[in-house]
Amino acid sequence: MLLARPNPINLFIVRGEQQRVDDYLLVRTIQLKPETPRVEDYLEAIYRQVQERGYTSTIDLADKLQVKPPTVSIMLRKLDRDGYLMYEPYRGMKLTEKGEKVAISVISRHRVISEFLSIIGVAEKEAQHDAEGIEHHVLPTTVHKIERLVEFLRKNEKSLNAIRDYTRT
Ligand code: CA
Image 1 (cartoon, rainbow, N blue to C red):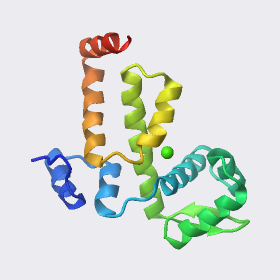
Image 2 (cartoon, rainbow, N blue to C red):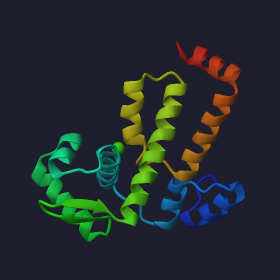
Image 3 (cartoon, helix red, strand yellow):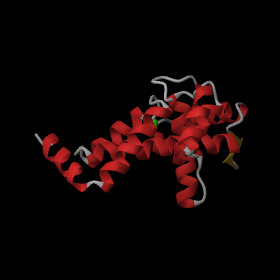
């Protein structure tokens, strides 16, 4: 049975029941201490930039996260120390498996939440903005429910249109 706010261990049972193997569920299940929003934002940004262009740098991250390069360097050293990435000043960085899992987890949460917000009629820019914040605080079981709802609405155009009509005003 699904508990309203299961502890992380119980999520294994939830996963088993629903036969879901989504990374974002796994990540928060195996890591009892969730990362801070800032750590998640860094890992997400590094992952995205490397996916998009094959590399990233202190300057690029500073740009993306709107902080000064020295701030980025400090954070990168911390992330290296905590096992999220390997960082060599002036040479580059590479996410570890642990860092990559967290990044994929955040990106999954972001995608589900922004899609949900778009579906109920929130404008793209606002949906992205809100998802940026919500993604760090939402429980895996909640993301899963939202994802299921989005799936349902994608398959049921009538319901989707009814909701869109209703939320328009
Ligand atoms: Ca964020």
